[in-house]
Image (cartoon, helix red, strand yellow):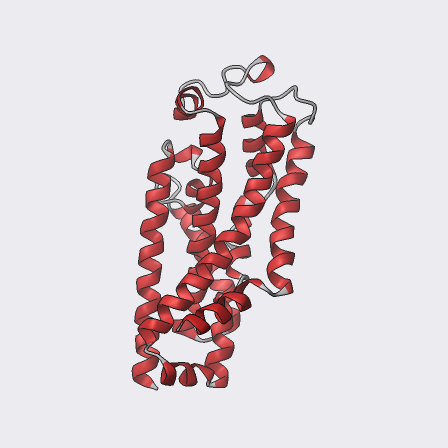
Amino acid sequence: MTGFFREDLKRSFLNIGFFIRMAAVTVLLLTAEAAGAPLNRTRSSYYILVNAFAASGFGPFAAVFPVLAYGADFCEEYESGYYRMIFARMSPMRFGRTRILTVALSGGVMLAIPVALACLGAYTFGVPGVPQGSDKGLLNGTVMLTYVMKYGDWYIAFGKIVLGFLFGCVWALVGLAFAVWIGNRYVALIAPFVLYESMWIGLNKLPWLNPIRLLRGDDVGSYPLAVGMECVYLIAVSAVIMAGLLRRYRNG
């Protein structure tokens, strides 16, 4: 089991596609930071960071990148019949736990690192703390002001990195869920994006359920609530994957 986990983890990370997609997200966010504000420590770090997420065009397509990570590879194992060899070596539950973990990690890291670099850029080239000058009043009436004053800027940065990681985990697993149930690579790659866009539009008045609002965190009004909801989605999608693997096992 340990050997299989190690090899599965290597496959999920050590492939050129993983690094290309992570680089693409990084370029999107950092380019938006450079274009959205002068990077000469005259604008608020929070303004630079929020503007990067809002103006980069990353949000509407955010679910695409983790889905492309590793989850859809199950379709190749299904079409080749390799998954039967795996089930001969271990139960679908053990395989499911391993694959869920490796897919989630690959999707989570793919987004967490670019978000961390975006935070680093914002707090390096912007002015940390409560926004002043032309950005004065930016946080008035929001819980973000409380976060900055009570905990400091690290809380905002850490919250966004955690939310980016969890968002990547969830949507990488959504891709795996479609792969397990449908078995078609194209569906596994396209369907999560359609679902994401539908949830974004359909849940617009419910920010604590809306995936793009959860990714940003600010719109939810509570980072802990956003983290909690991402964890709920994570558990729900994992249960769907497990049910799909048991179905594949029973059907041979």
